[in-house]
Image (cartoon, rainbow, N blue to C red; front, side):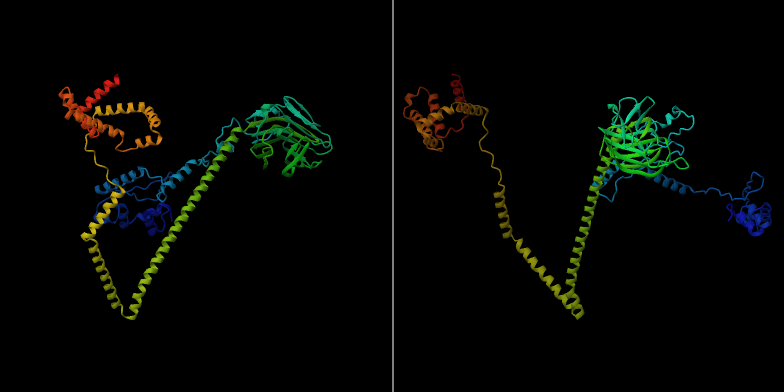
Length: 593
């Protein structure tokens, strides 16, 4: 059980009874056999006679020997073992250095992408477990939201004013990292109360029974929506009734919120404390409406108290003397001035410090919007996941039904065989089944031979080609004539230009002379019309001149030209390259003129 257990100590304990002292160790190591074992390095060296190195015993600082521990030399590996070990270490290092996939192999690519996007939108929470315990405490805004502050918020230490201690000495510890609200610039009080302000402090008097006073700073630059305000208020007992005093905020046109201390007892106890409530309420003119009593029947001491209010959107948090008083949410008023309130007493206020929390409000609004987006994304993701789970369950049910159906079919098919086996004629049934299958195969083989015959193949091919011609006929063959020459194209363009130029005139003249019906009939006439008859008459005239009246032709060229013209008129202006060039030249000359 000794933490310094060694073989030497165990043997010394076995032979001498103790190894805790130097004498016990010397007795255990004495003797020829065990002396050879321990001094010679083991039983093998004892019988072989080869001496080994003796491990010296360590000594403590006080000179006494310590329990001996056997020196274990490092293991000696052979070359091939060292090579394998180095190779395995290199493989492990290479595996750890390679980049592993960040996606989940058990999710689809779309699911992994949505999960990565949701994770990237999440705000990383800083680990605060490694912070220094002696470091100063920070607010929620500094730690979580990361907002920078020029100084500490109010209220880690309350106003410890005792004896002759001056206000200037504690001013640094009581101020917010904000703006000091002046008590002598543009303060307005309600009817029935009186406000007196100076650079150091302000006094609100509403001492008459039933009078409730309110005084606010109406400087336009000191109107806030989201803020943190603190003030030192001197609590004084009223003459007739105990009275109330506190802070007014978000006051606009006499309407706003109040946080005040309400004394309920005229007499103080043996320790100098009165009883009262901490109340958060509303004010409308001179009418006060308590919304919530934050703390009831608490001991309150007269004198100076630090009252603090943090208003952020609809959340209102109240503190008294650096202690949490209560919290409430209300959306009746959103912006206004800051001031003090009093009822049936006199209140003195000083050190009014206010910090604008506009940046914090915007950050909170953005965080809320972000949380709503994340919540909607999570809801959508949950719905999609639930839908996928439903689809999986539905697919499993479909597969199960299909398998049950297949099992039922199989069991129905096997019923006949099982019945035959029980009746003892299973072999006969198997032979009949085999004959049926062979007969079916033979019939199918013959049907296949008939279908693959030449007559049926020709009919099928003929029907296929006919359907193909009807559904998608082949394109028309290319024309046998060569393409028109550039001269022909130019002649045609000139003809179309001249025709378009005078089309309106000859159409109107034709309709006027022939009438609308006859003109349209002539336009739609395919053959045998006046133009065709006129061409035939001209062609006959040219042929008669060349054949029966050769004396009227001056030369051979003119006679040949008449023949070509007659032939072109009779054959609907067939292509003749030389004659086309001649006509083009004649047409150009006529167009110039």
